[in-house]
Amino acid sequence: MEIFKRKNIEVKGKHDKPILTDVIFRENNKLKPVVIFCHGYKGFKDWGAWEKMAEQFAGEDFFFVKFNFSHNGTTPQDPTNFMDIMAFGENNYSKELDDLQQLIDWLLHPDFEYGQHLDPSNINLIGHSRGGGIAAIKASEELRITKLITFSSVSDFGNRFPGEKEIDKWKEKGVSYITNARTGQQLPHHFQFYTNFKENEERLTISRAVKELKIPHLIVHGSNDTSVPISDSGELFEWSPFPDLLLVESADHVYGTCHPWEEDKLPIEFQYVLDHTLKFLKEDKEALLKKTASTDSSNF
Image (cartoon, rainbow, N blue to C red; front, side, top):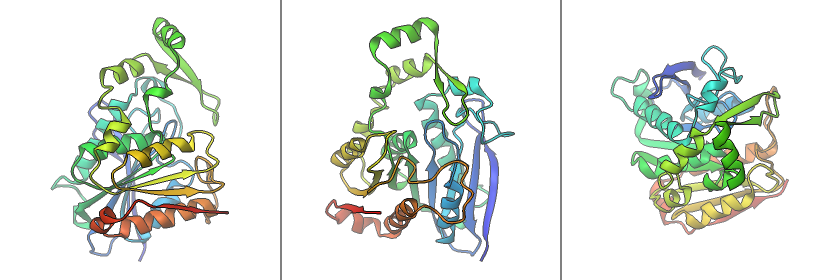
């Protein structure tokens, strides 16, 4: 049975920009568990092998959803390039949490166009890198979430800000810039990014959120990750009440994938991650809650 795709749906956001969204599933009259994927910093829903991932999950009878955060810098007209750098500069963690909540509410609304295909009692979040932190906070807030999976996730938003002197310069100038290594663009961060974090610091503390989780949590990290240290996932494992840790030997931050990804076959590291993620999602929630926390690893 072929996989159905509807790409670039414009879901209404709370902050004057749409949340560009894809849904991927098989039309077979079965209620499917939902998987919502949150991209990371300088990421987007169509980066690299995320589309191949979506197709695999749909083929395993999941209702897969991936989306662009409304202020990630892409546009509906160009969803894979950072053409709206003003939006990028005005993004913050609170807006991303609002986007994710809007998306969950949209999926579970009684009038959702594809509602007959999804199981509203089985809603799962996957977050990569910064998106892992966003997914973890939302999973602690939103009682409709069934399971949480974090790929290469950060464990602390606060410690990713610069030191006091740099923050003073940032405040004085009102903006700082970061280079996008893939495109060479100078992308802005307006100072509101920092002030929004400080104003909402308790909510945006990932350790607090993870400690409050009441659901199974699969924590995935590569041993050769140079973007987010593996110790971040070690902290998530210590904090999470119901953790399962998957350490992937030799894997980098994106498990051997890159952008664009033009091959049919996935890297062995990423396929390993997806296989274990699917197994975790298919396992009974109550059985997972009763399991003793375990560590799994593999060599490539």
